[in-house]
Image (tube, rainbow, N blue to C red):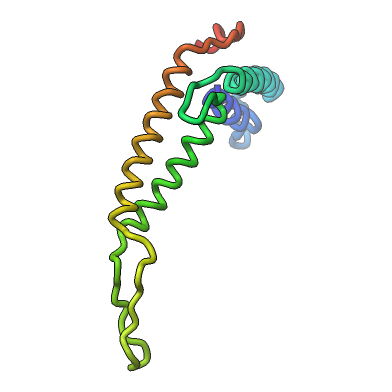
Length: 157
């Protein structure tokens, strides 16, 4: 539906003006600007409705998880947070325990020492990534079981 909205916006933009040379007849688009505005208004209304129904289903349906039950919405947010943490841990894990930064202004050599064990962070990132993947699969499984009643769907299929 979002693609259809964009198509209607583009179609309306094309129907907003007509170009012609002096003395030539105007070739009008198949649909008027006002017709396309109405069609766009209806599709947007249906889009808001299905968006609401999906959001409601994401709150109403539950996933069993390690720390207890989560709504699909909570599980989606947790999966995003887990993946964000995985990326951070992987980045830290790529560092050396001690890294020579170089000489500054011909003074002594400067080193940077990690206050963590990079190899352990890599390992923790891998475990956390597996957990995020399991959660994503649980979300996907639940999403396949959830049905949303949307009578207007027929006109978009």
